[in-house]
Image (cartoon, rainbow, N blue to C red; front, side, top):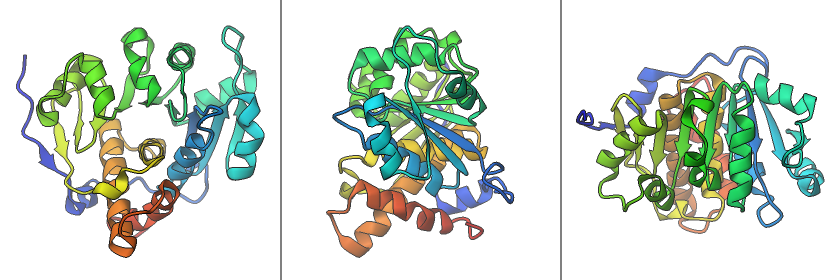
Length: 282
């Protein structure tokens, strides 16, 4: 077993060196994201994630959610194309299937509250031609229920500490050492809190953030930001690093102005300012 690389500290200078794809001159050239999730208990998660994807630079966003929520999402998120999810076991709608395959990045998980639904979505997506898949929330817990070879080669796992421990089947001892092993095993880029790891053993450490990020919906914004950067054309590991840093920096900017008490929707709206600190073109 190879030893993980020494972690690279994520700084604006590093991100500036990496750069961002040229956005081009239209929404099509900026990339398309598809957000899949939501439940009656958490209808806003897909809205938060989808808005975050647009805020970091994606040009178009589609949202797929259960029928009872579609009109709510259409009103709350007029910028999105909204698709009604088909019932389990039924053939997916042709228009949705095409839109899913055409998306540059697909996020599954925000707002799902049933492990069986999350598992069903991963299984359904394994039959689609997905370019890059971002797995979040309940979908992380269902990840091992689907054969890795059935999922896209470009896979990003956005896990909280409990979800990382579920994947490891043990408590996390040291994120900077545990995540690279998990990334290699899953053949995926894995993000958890202050660390991002890639399957080749590379690991990045994030020092930004703070207690203000511990607010309802913050993780949905984070997952959407990662997906948005992937949709723009960044490689999975860079999309995860950019998304995690921008989310944390947005929280830092809000803390400087407001202290604690900002909302997840405030985080999403602060993302462009965070990105602009690195890339003046934005």
